[in-house]
Length: 208
Image 1 (cartoon, rainbow, N blue to C red):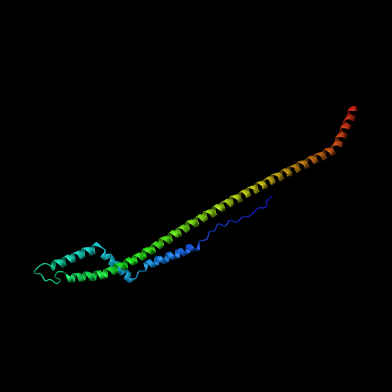
Image 2 (tube, rainbow, N blue to C red):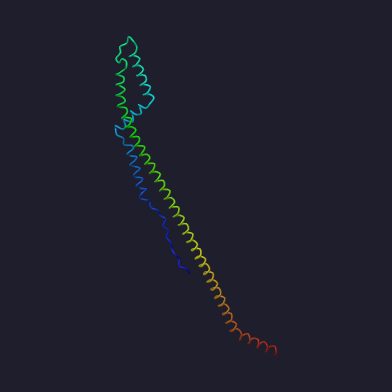
C-alpha cells in the first residue's frame, strides 16, 4: 500500500505594487486636471469667445459701423481717416488677446500632456491586468493538472483497496470451506466405525 500524499495547491497571485502606484498616479492626474485656477478658467472662456463666429460677426459689425459713421458726410466723426483711434483699439485688443490665447493654449497643452500621461498609465495598467490575468490562468491550469494527478493517485489507491478487499473475502471464503471440509472429514472418521459395526451386524442377521 502506497502512502497517501496530501498536496496543497497555492494559486494566489498578488497585486503588483506598480499597479497600485499607477492607480494613485491616475487619481492625482484626474484631480490635477479638475483643479483649474480662476485665471485659467477666464483665459479659456475668453479664448473660446474670441475663437467663435459670434465674436467674429460682432467685430465685423462694429468695424463696419465705425468706418461707415466716420465716413458719411454730415455726421459727427469721432475718428476720421485713417482711423487712428480704431487702430489703437485694435492694438490694445491684440495686445491683450494674444497673451490670453497663449495662456489658454499653454494650459490646453499641459492638459493634453496630462491626458496623454493618463492614457499611458491606463494602457500600462491594462497591460499589467492582462499579465496578471495570464498569471492567474496559468496558476489555475497548474492547479487543475495537480488535481488531476491527485485524482489519479486516489483512483489507483482505491483500486488497490478494492483488490485487497476482494482478496480478503476470497481468503475468508477459502478458510470457511476448509473448515467445513475438515469438519466433514472428522465426522466421517467418527462415523466410519459405527457404519462398519452396523454392516457386520446386518451380515450376522442375514446369515441367521
